[in-house]
Length: 434
Image (tube, rainbow, N blue to C red; front, side):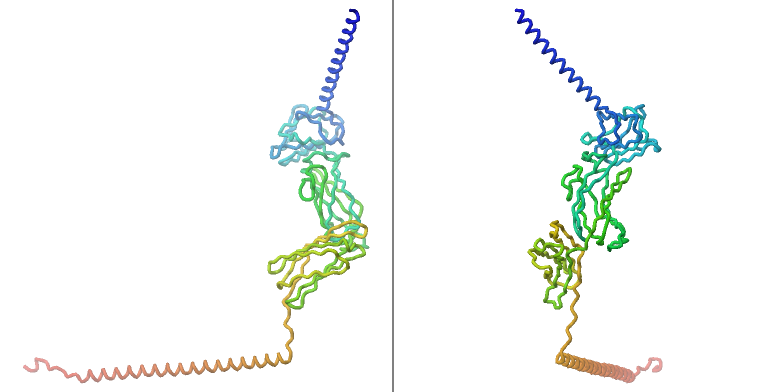
């Protein structure tokens, strides 16, 4: 019996101990959760704002902070409630301390010497996208290949960092504009010495075009190097509503295109034009070469052509001689260089004008025949003029005779009338007879 009581007592202690440990664990978890919900913002390099119930806390050691809040699309700007209960609005805040940018989707707010303590936001905050502490936003792009070529189309990807961590907030791309410029190094050994910087592309993270996934933090651009060959300094420009950043990379060299084009015009109407393609086989592997093209003819017709399985450095493609005027040709070249890198060239501004051919010089017999024909035409023209003059003369004579005949008949009629009237006897009056 004693043994049974002891075992029961030990079992009771075991159950009580487990329950106590579970309660202690739950209490610790709740405490940790509450602590994380109102965590101190004391790390300026942190990415995501620990916000719960639209509350957050700022530590006393923060001198300046930039906050990014994503709202439900089309909603009104948020209201910031300070620890002392006072409110800041987008249209009413101390401008010497606060810089506030808002649009239809987000608010970006920079605060100098923020009040320590618990803050609140009032408004329609997007719960699916965490608020962000914007610190040192940087962009790191993958290295550009070398060499690059004139008219090359190239796809480049890069990652946007907020501090030292990649941006994971899906809607962060809405707040930045990311572009790439090519700036000449002004190296006198290259043809681009002194040329102006050129903006050649923009990066996006919206899942459109060449960007694979929207909001994944990977920004993608595909741009065309339609610039003067030479040495350039690729520069990435990052623009946010509150500040701008520029990031330079190592210089790159853009070589002249390894594929040249020349048009040989047809001399006769029944002949085709020829597009001569000259491939630099010192830089391009001929077996890898392929070309797709489209021709817009002056008469409005459109035709395509292609070329592959090239085994010599200079080839030609016939272009139908359909009409006279300006022809436009768009081409895409796909090839591999001698270092094994695949590349694509895009030529979308090639054009040529086919003029109406000049008449061929006549032979001596043709010239004699043409002279005889001209003399015959001249004789016939003179004869026609004489016939017209004779016809006009006859018409004039007939008109004159007709007019004179009418006048004679009219005069004779008047004379006859007057004579007839003078022959009528006068009747004597009655007064004289009486």
